[in-house]
Image 1 (cartoon, rainbow, N blue to C red):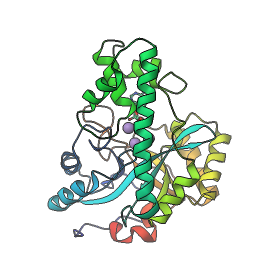
Image 2 (cartoon, helix red, strand yellow):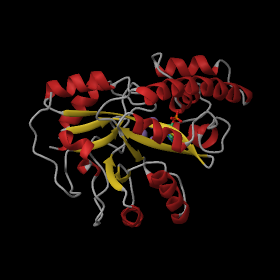
Image 3 (cartoon, rainbow, N blue to C red):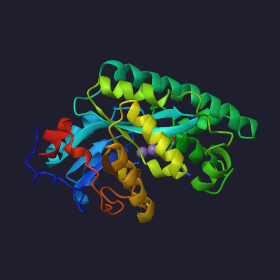
Length: 297
Ligand code: AMP
Ligand code: MN
Ligand code: MN
Ligand code: MN
């Protein structure tokens, strides 16, 4: 059911009560889908998209609860992909849900996560910890596919490292032993899955891949060529100067702009609906996409 809410404006503005990138316990978030909807309500976020890593498992629960609270929850997922050997995340906004090629693709992503988890465990065992898979599973606290944060928590719990940032820095971050990217499908393939579900493919946090301006431009070109329609212009933590530079890159390619906090857990630097200020630009907000007309109205 669609709740009556004031329509979203035609341009980017502060305080829209809109967050199109959030995680729950269906992936590596700390809040259940229900608790996430409640956290949104508490922060004045009236429209949100649940974008758990490589799954839509939490969406039905989030939507039911959002509905009962008078909020609007859009189905979504954040898909893991590869582009030129770099791990790139693509947010799928799914007003019609996940079906067909995307449904099959998400099942394949879950298998890829399982295979990757075994390889990560194997690699971390080589550097000295035992029973790594069981330890990560214990940290996950459920049977959902494992993510690198589960391994990071296991390393902290076993006192191999003092904290999560160190776990990523030494063992799980880019180029470290636990960084196994080879299982993910190519960027263009994932964009095709999303389009097959009548979804909108959004390049997630373009400023977090440590790319040069030029290489980021090439990524945006490849993404658009593949059928991607938007990129996150506004994110949970982002520098204002590079935000303006990113806006120019989206304008030059007629890519729409999205906004999402990438919220994972309360008490940290990120909160539902809290993100960088919108840069002055002519980028068209993704909520003006015809497929999101009902969501934005
Ligand atoms: P995965 O999807 O399993 O490859 O795990 C990636 C997730 O790990 C990201 O979505 C973040 O939630 C988390 N992550 C990545 N880098 C760090 C870091 N340096 N410190 C803490 N968490 C991180
Ligand atoms: Mn995450
Ligand atoms: Mn991401
Ligand atoms: Mn995310």
